[in-house]
Length: 163
Image 1 (cartoon, one colour):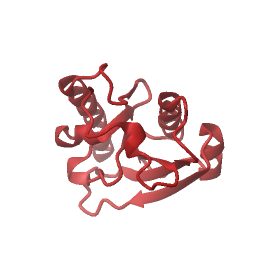
Image 2 (cartoon, helix red, strand yellow; image 1 turned 90 degrees about the horizontal axis):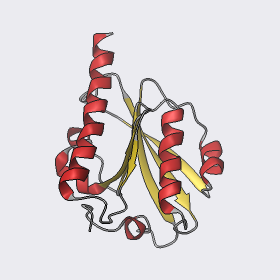
Image 3 (cartoon, rainbow, N blue to C red; image 1 turned 120 degrees about the vertical axis):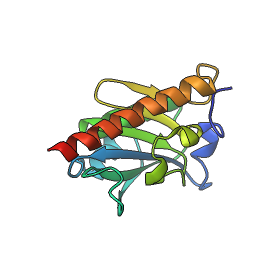
């Protein structure tokens, strides 16, 4: 089994009424997407966005938004839907986008090795990886993938600090 705390299909149905994908993305400024347009483009029933306030400026001038994507049920092509969510966030200006289980976000541990088993997708403008918890990923290879996303996020934050 892959390196996740629990299977993705089970984890995203925590509410008992729908499947909710919790996505996050770091932007310089805000996202350039409308929730309704995102919902239509990924086949979701609803999309909600939340600004994550970085009071300690852990990520410099980057703004992080949580984007909750609701589906009536777990999509048949779950991996395809998850990849679409990540792609849309990057297309909307996200420097790094990721998928995490409900309650997994913390600025001090964003995309860190100790929370890699709570992250199930990562993307930048030139790569995207999804982990559904299957045998394609070992703990080590998935943690390395999440750390690669963290490095991209830290580089983007440092780039903004240099500007």
